[in-house]
Image 1 (cartoon, rainbow, N blue to C red):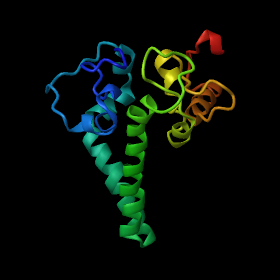
Image 2: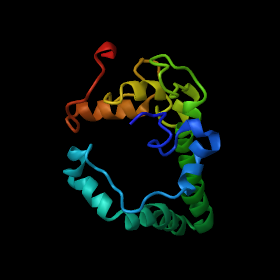
Image 3: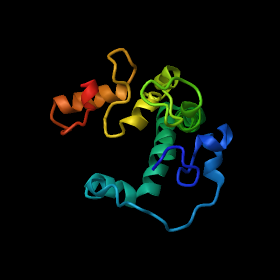
Length: 178
């Protein structure tokens, strides 16, 4: 999939900021079309299969049930629900949406100029490393987004730590950035 293909990329930045940020969520898509041919390893994962089968109850439990429970236990039901539930969802969604929009419009392209993806250190801080988007699109198989030691990428550090203790294996790295 080409990141700049307006027909195949559901949130192509070539359609403008608002479309790539959130407009893509309100357009119609063909119903019942799910193509999982490129992820056979993920389809075999029991935990992911469980999450896929029970998506709605898990979302309701973690995004409404847990914040309400914590609020009830602390005596601050509405405040906790609004902060831990609503505000958390709004911020995390928009930071993610910024990867679809701003990370294709604002920043540098140190690895390739053949697509709109850009590296943006401000977005990297807000999205735990996802802001190094130009690297990600050029070397999608690499588990890292920030490959330099000074680049903020806590997700990379978590995966490397899990690898160190034996909970992940076969981490893929781009040879030029080993």
